Image (cartoon, rainbow, N blue to C red; front, top):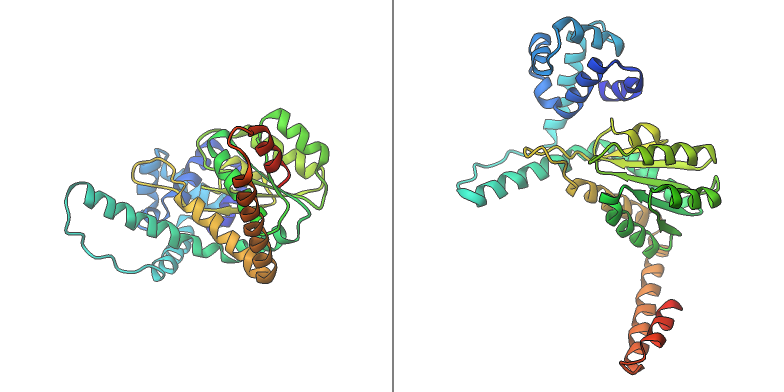
Length: 295
């Protein structure tokens, strides 16, 4: 499929070809209705470049590439439902439009079902799971690692800065997995370097990104993509969170009994801690900290 071919060739593409690749991946629906000349005009290249780009991917020309893009669009449209006309004004109308956009982005994730299942199986079997992101996404990494711990998995949120990366590499083994969450707000070179270093230690790497052309997506062994394009041109993290939730549910489905036991044990521990805390005098802060440190 054209998306897989673009991703496989992306690193070796020229700057102009990369511009075309980015536009096609991020505006697939529009591209399906463009001729080679119209696409060239949109990307500010000459039509011959569009033809050469198609041939670089292994097609006879743009006509063959365009035919495959149209087939992909037809498959995607079959998953969608007809939206009604929103009879509203102002902010209410804008919110309704954003809800439709969110629905579209979520529907686009259906094509990744097998990839999600594969990543879920790998995570479920891992000895330890390390989750990282750039500072803008570190909160998401911490939240998701907490949810993995809730299922009884040995998961840790780590920062991607050099000092934390060095500590991670010091103890990582081939039985571990590194998960990189990439929102796409920066170059993320630290994440790329970390992925390469972890792979050299024999551990599996997984990226969960908002675009297949981001550096972590191109460096990781396995990649899941959550569509993030919005009319405001700011990458959205809503579908990224939805994809993480879907992956979490897939892990639960692999061993429902274990997940239930782990959640019940966590709740029991929490209840015990709350009960013990109520017995402490309000001024005994040191004892309270010791108590929570034993949890």
